[in-house]
Length: 443
Image (cartoon, rainbow, N blue to C red; front, side, top):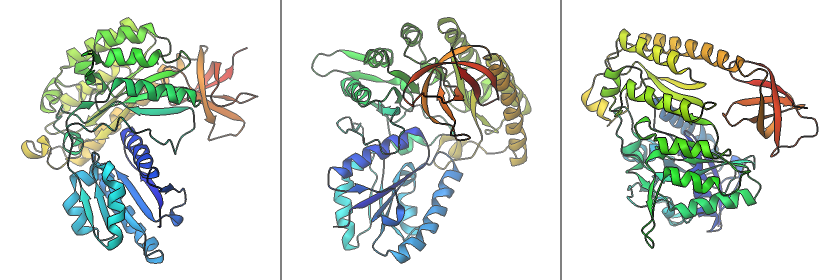
């Protein structure tokens, strides 16, 4: 039996975590992961549907793979993930070199599907589940530095932001067994990992009830349970929704030094009118209250965000409100995008994409320029400070330097000496750029 699998993963951290689950499920059935695509019998492409350019990138990749299939005619290609869920019928009709399509909740069916497609069948499994969490699967960490890892704690989303396809491609929220999360964190620590990031579309919504004891575990309790695995295990999380960020979580974070001082809090817009149209369930005032709470409980916490330029109906006044939000919060980092209409979302059905592309581009460029200035000023204030850094690897620019991140998730580069990845080291920041801190090992 030809059983070599090759996986390409696109999109968010959740997709990468899912690819590790898929690898584990298939390895149980005798399939082997290969790093060279030219030795693969099955090519699995785990896809993203959050923006149109992500889907176009997959379409281009499928065209590129036709040459490989001509020289290795037995190779089968499968589409996994959010794009598979959203475009099953189109992909089957338009991409004749795709043999199988599998949505995020149907990965357990993959081994049986791979056997069936040998007979020339083309198969699609995309039914969403209200219970699947894969909490009994030990992911195989195949593309890792051996130091940092992601743990998926929940699946799905039911916030239904007007611009977002996630509720339609990943289904409703359901939380994973808390004990299985803690066991996975402990196992990773025993294997030498020193940092885990708990993943969910909205981790603040995590809720799990023990069927035996009736005990309920919310996200603050889960964070505490994972932090107690070992004080040398750093704990991060992504992503938070502002409407659910509680003081209880902030108190837990402040109580455990190994819970990292960094919160990703997507704002999307600084305009109350835009936030209402986006169905974000909070106002700018609520958002700023949460920022003030973070500063109060965790004064040294870094804050990062997501923002959309040019959403439906956005005026210049709305845009200026977003710029003002950036000036007020002073984010350490931001993911900044132009709005692109996604099919079957509330916005596509009920709103009009009426901001000209050149206006979107100009507004995005203004946000990027402001954020670059703020990030540089924030980093300049770090010069002279000493941070504990978890060393992750060799710098891309020089083999004589290492890089790691501090608790605030800022990258620090320094001379390697005899230090090895996986160690904690105190580093003094001596200079910086807008993106990177440059330091030296503290004496």
